[in-house]
Image 1 (tube, rainbow, N blue to C red):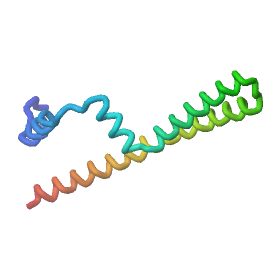
Image 2: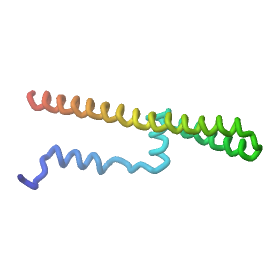
Image 3: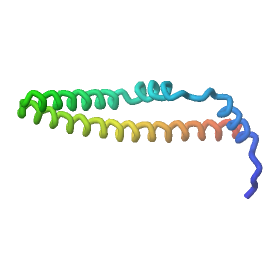
Image 4: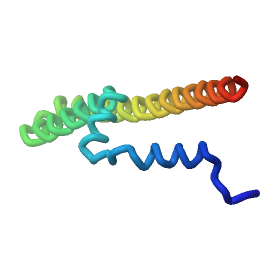
Length: 110
């Protein structure tokens, strides 16, 4: 196996190096756009936890219990949204890679 890079490898590396780096805030914004259900689940979980804390302070056991149940449901929703989004984007990435490979094969045959 040779350690030399092909022209395509070198060009791909150049393109990657020319891209601007992504800040943490940019990454958060991109992820929120890609998977909007996850931030919604996090917000609902936070609301339920704060509301349960309020229920504990006021001594309202029924309300507190309902809020803790809502928190568990919201956490479950958030985890399912994360897993579902991950699976979706993996499949999307595989399709894009297959399409790019097909395009490269077509370009080579010309």
